[in-house]
Amino acid sequence: MLGISFDTEGENKAFAEKFGYDFPLLCDVDRKIGLAYGACKSPKDRYAARLTYVIGPGGVIEQAIDTKDPGGQAAALLKTFPAK
Image (tube, rainbow, N blue to C red; front, side, top):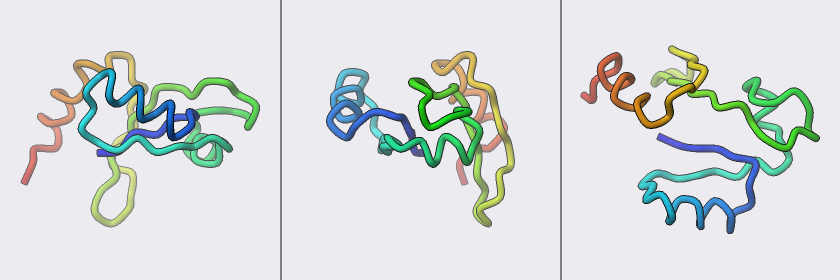
């Protein structure tokens, strides 16, 4: 699992430590990933949409979710895609 935000490396580190994230948060300060995946409409957008993508082993997007409940979403995804 990876997270991506428009924040800087320092901001992401502080956020991950504050909330106890045990997965990497990548920085997309130039919005290139956000634009490619539809999380923003412009490089000037201040915030990204909360989206989740399940990307399969072949690099194909298997599921795209508009993330309305970040806290409960992981459990729902694990039911759909159980660990092997």
